[in-house]
Length: 135
Image (cartoon, rainbow, N blue to C red; front, side, top):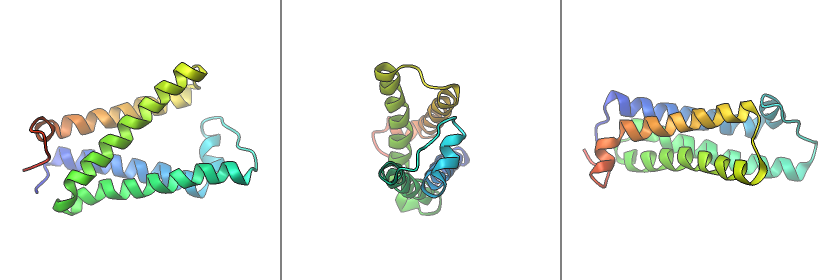
């Protein structure tokens, strides 16, 4: 299945973002969260709980990128990108409702996540409207 340039940009942006965020949390969680003004304690259990989903996010980013290079992976890549970048904002909205407003850095992340989700929906709108991801 051939992708147009906008579809490649959407999957590339999604994949690189997921890999970047996931890898940063996996490898340097204290530095990553400090960039949001969050100070993590030296708690092995907490760090494990942060690193485990970060590894998953990194792998999901690889799946997103795979759609660019392997036509057979486009459906999986698109579903993965939409799932990740719609689920993150939903989780942030639930947190805001339950816990209160987050910092401006987290709000910026929310807006970026919404932008990536919108890019994916826009880029793949014709494929999504047809009920499946086909050429």
